[in-house]
Image (tube, rainbow, N blue to C red):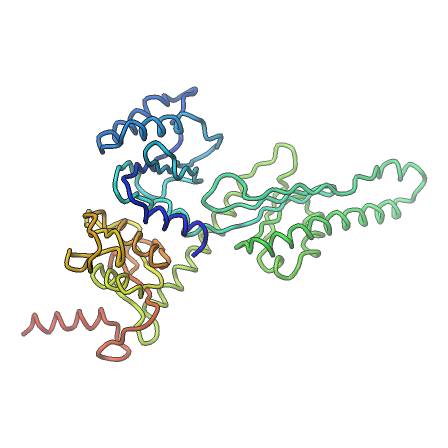
Amino acid sequence: MDSQTHELAELWRRDGTFSSVFIDANGTWDGPGHDGEARRRQVLDRLARAGAPDADLATVERILAVPTGTAGPHSRFLVVHNGEPLLDEVLSGPLVWPETVAYLEIPDLVPLVKYRQNDVVYLVVEAGRGNGEINAYRASHVAALRHENIEGRTDSLNKVQAGGWSHSNYQQHSEEIWKQNQSQLAAAVNELVRQLRPGFVLLAGDVRAVQLLSEELSAAARDISTVVPANLLAAGSSRESLQARISRKLEEIRQRAQSLLLDKLSAGDSENGALGFGAVVHSLQQSQADTVLIDSEGTDGRTLLALADAPWVATVPEEALGARVIGPVPAVLAIVRAATLTESRVVFVDHGILPKSAEVAAVLRWPTGPAIPGTPRWEQEQAQGQAQGQG
């Protein structure tokens, strides 16, 4: 379990009642063209109606009134307990989950889990002939994870040329300086690739500088690098092509991971999958689910029982096995919480692509063999149901 998932698991184990806020962050502070106070009041009114105490309301008001300092679409995710902010994250891009304002004994961390599922680390490298910049990002966050500015040699080449060097000597001297600068930049990129294990590296900047940089990269860095045809260091340059390339790369990674999981769910002897709420809940109760797949369009108001201890989730009180029943909560919240607490990965998938248009499924850590080898259990169940209907 990584540190981010461990943080969520610990929060889901805590006793208490929590205010959770997930909203579009644009316009929550006062400024030209928008009424931040009215927007904040809408959020606070919803939170107050949910039962949140004044201390939580005051904290949420204070946080939302401060500008995020971020341009473009982004959202804000908050969890507050007795006036103490436990989580406060600014998330990049448009909303990926409906806005949520709640006061529950189980904090609603589902939007954050969904943002983090494709939380790929990537590098953007901007190469100039005399300098370079490296920024490391997490896909879900606006601010850079790491930033390095590389200052290369700045020899006054014009003065050297004026001293009597031939044009060919001048060009050779310039080329050597550029190579040294890009070698220095490449060393920094190679080290960050080794440390952060990014999903991809984008190279942009001066055409010749990028070419020299590519030649100096390690095999590990070169294998995941793509050149973006844009000189981002040039005055007045646009970053639109870079952002478009980043979005495409992230979507490629998401689609590839989704396809692999669907193959695991249905491939081979088909014994490694659970389909539907009952089967998935059972697999979570046994800590058998390796990866839980959830349809991105939700579960139409269905609820499940959240438990204060293992097995963490139940469909009926009799399944609690002595654990305190906290109460009914939205099914997605109950499933995601139980998956996190049993160290299962959670992946939201495109709508309608799970077998039999199921809303949830799970890839299992160990198989449960079907009565007919080689046939998915859900296909057998469907055939049995049809046979019973005909009988």
